[in-house]
Amino acid sequence: MLQTKSSSQAIPLDVQQVVKKYPQGGTVVHALDGVSLSVEPGEFVAIMGASGSGKSTLLHAMAGLIDVDAGRVLVAGQDLSQLADGPLTRFRRDNLGIVFQAYNLIPSLSAEDNIRLPAPKSLGKQLDATVDELFERFGMTARRHHKPGALSGGEQQRIAIARALICNPTILLADEPTGSLDSVTGTQICELLRDLVDNQGRSIVMVTHEPHVAMWADRICVLKDGTNLAELQTDGRRDPQTVAQQYQEALGAETVA
Image (cartoon, rainbow, N blue to C red):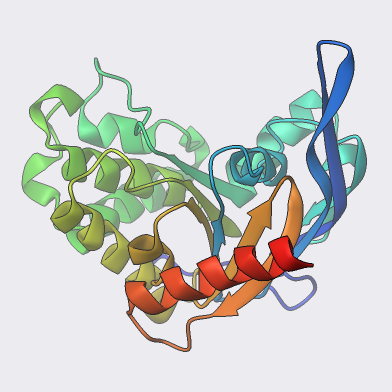
């Protein structure tokens, strides 16, 4: 059975005062301006903010897909900025599972081959058992030989999540995972992510701008203009109206201040 990696020595994710700047015309835009965020083992954190708030930039920094200009991103205690390209690629494969809004499946490969793609062949029979477990857990066994074009959006996202889990990552990062799905299918994906936290102890960070998606998390980090604005506790409630109200109140308090 696929077990989460031990987190006894370091928390899964620790973002410390991260800054990311981009030149724009004759000025410099701070996409991230001193953002900090820690994620504990078995915690589900949503990052919420409007377009341009810096949430996707933050996720890409967490994944080591972009360099930061200041601050540190530590995954399982490893400072990503201290790794050269080759070691970073291997570390990302083994410790970071990434799920995208557009699924990013390879159209010419079957669902099974897409899931297997990131895994080293040295895993052998262990890999076979993990693949079987993921198909069964996600209710996709009958679709394992189908190519992405023959799958629904929800089925493609399930395969994308399974692919992100194949190397048993320290943390799962999801960038608007329901953004291309209808509300019913999106809820099913949220339930799947919640199940991974509750029953497997997975640590998840999810970017979204939707209250009905953010409500599935344990904690919501609100970003605005590249800075931490507020933290909201869901307390296990699945109430999008409450999340939306708290989010608007956080924005309103910042405006008054």
